[in-house]
Image (cartoon, rainbow, N blue to C red; front, side, top):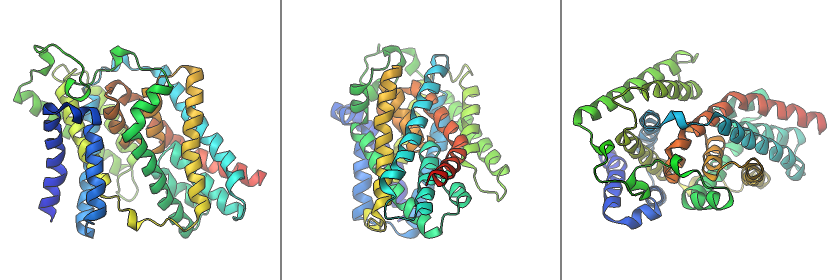
Length: 383
């Protein structure tokens, strides 16, 4: 079963990528959308055993740290806009906090005030930082294990729905409501966005030696980042914030090496890893195992926070004239966390938003705990 899973996870994305060269409709639908649908069908009609599911999750967890350096090393960081990243970050941050605060007064009726304030605190921390912020905030505000289980379960459901929305409709939705990105910033390779390029484009010519060089640098970056992330952790586990931060820093440095600069093959190799990750998370999603009836007010609240904050973020973005690609990738970074940013960039066909998304996600990681516990104290003071 393990060998079959490996062939499925590592082989299917490659097959879809190769088929996309032959059939243009795959590009139009998006290879990622096709893989996500296949993964959902497999995960729900061919449930994985415990050991197989663990292997599936392990492969998915490895794919993202490998994808980040490969994709970042292919980016032209001179075009990265710090001003745009800061504006997008605060749009998302303020939107989540406003909606989290307002949602408390809309949904807490019939619930214990303190417990629902705890839910609000954890939600604010997750959707401005990420899942790593959830446990520290829950402990910091005294949330019970049972309530934490409900919040975690419902978070998987609602963030999963948002991810499905992004995969199937995100690119069209965000670009229709907000200004399109500048043409020169969309530098994705031809076979993933159908952008015409000269056939003699030298950037496509790459030797086996260069591929080995790129892979060697990537594995070195991942190894160093993993070592550093476990070194700073008291129990030897991986510190996700440190891992992403180290990966990003080292990848930026490597992007200035001449053998790597602007190699689209590096980005395409990273894209393959993103496809593996996407197939993995879809395969692990078994709807029948989700608790949908535990506490519907919490489910409604989380749904309100995620989709309400998106609406507010779009309004702020229109006022500040932020393009749709930047807003989409920032919302994914905050709601789904930085590991999903490469997937969003791939969906958009815009590698220039990759650095913006990861930076926004890291800032959220750093501030999430403060914001979550601070919101709890404010709600207890007012409630």
